[in-house]
Image (tube, rainbow, N blue to C red):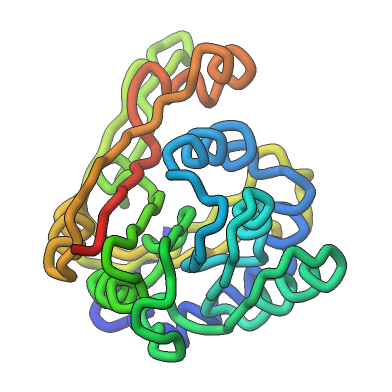
Length: 268
């Protein structure tokens, strides 16, 4: 893990550059279905967490290459996707051209939605993206602005209480995972997390390099409150018994900790 202290990786332009560098491999692996945590755990849980989408005008914050945006559109919503990565938006536009679902895409930061009118959306959604920007508070304010009165924001992120710079699974002598260590929760350093989808075949240079920002639980809660959102509910999804039986890596989450956390908030 590479630590970046001070003002390193604090701009949207730097985040865009990092995601552009990951884009080709990310798109290939995600579209092949190798992100098992997304496909078989997080998406089913988060989609069940969402309100009814049919007939709503929805903005997808940090849409990436558009895989989930297309799923939202198939639920008969009118979708606009925004992402800071030029390459991701290009891939999303290509997918829309091949299978038109009426989705509009825009290269933009979710912390700066000034290109969109005030109150133009019924709902904002974001799947595993708001943790990857340097300014959650700015994103909350920008989202509040583009929602109509009574509109809502639903998003998922890595659980900040458990996904920490010094995290580590603890094992007994038999190699069984018996607990999980967290550490450096209060670190203010940005760090580069290098990893790959465990289900994907190995490739040369196959580690993604993802910027991770020091967002804590208070960052999300206080950021929503400061933007004048009313928090509706929070969920810490737990894999079902069937999920745990199918995937040992899900079983350890079911037993020990929530990897993700979901928020729902409404514009006053």
